[in-house]
View (cartoon, rainbow, N blue to C red):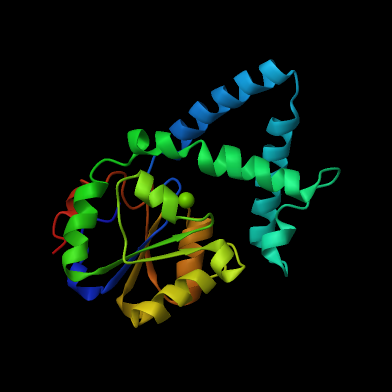
Length: 213
Ligand SMILES: [Mg+2]
């Protein structure tokens, strides 16, 4: 666990979205139950299998970047890309929105308010972050999704873009995420310090966050 941090050393604080600002495993359990009910009603496992294949493909694309990422992520064997895109938009983007607020990480609302007084607060996510951020009742000065840069973490392109937009150097940037192999590695490649939820801290109301501005 990281015990203390000198917040004045940073001007830009970049948060990952999924698993960092809300409890992703509880939301996923909720969505899995809804998917199971939908599969029973339709008597088809097509949606569950497609979403599972989509997730696996995204994980492997993160390790091996491809050109034309935005279109390539929806290309799955035996499925029409447009159908995959619609399922992902429906089940992974639209339907979780009204549930997000209930699974928001404890202490994150206050932390965002306090940080915003003296820091640029930004979001860097592998999925489009704006609607989720609003659904969480949070706001950030800057947001970047994988679609904006055509690369998934741990490629650091999104982090580099945020630093460029905020005019802040890597040494004065902090990345806060939940996966060392994605958020932590993107930060290392960009020369940025990182805090990983579950390793360096568990909740946003821990002492490490108490001295923020
Ligand atoms: Mg995450």
